[in-house]
Length: 193
Image (cartoon, rainbow, N blue to C red):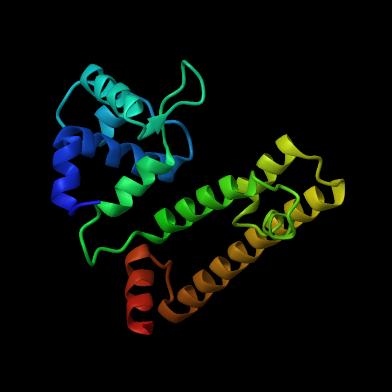
């Protein structure tokens, strides 16, 4: 592939902007993305009909697909690759984007052999289970124990995160003698680095 400028020129600035908006919204929500959502949140300054036409063109080019006729669009492997390749050099993907993209590819590579040992292990780890367990449940029959283990680990991770958050909040109240705002927490994390 060429440089970022060449890739955007090949696709066109508006199509590239629509593709980037779809990838970012899909990573954020995990739901197929409709043209209304992009029109409302992307700031492209065009109508949802224009965005719908661009999304249809991106689908024909293989950058987007949709799970069924009335659903919004989701990025394909090619769409994700284009998104990553056109990020400015030196720019880093946000952690949420990186995790979602890794989970997406892990889920699809797991479809080749859903009973492979690494797929079974990853499907019970809290971050990967929402991606891999549904695929395994569609293609094979994981044991009730594996499903239960995945749910228990997910609940335990959530409980641990809430416990840690409550401890941080309590320490902040003790330290400052008042409710702690997000700005104070942000400053404290920046100082701790």
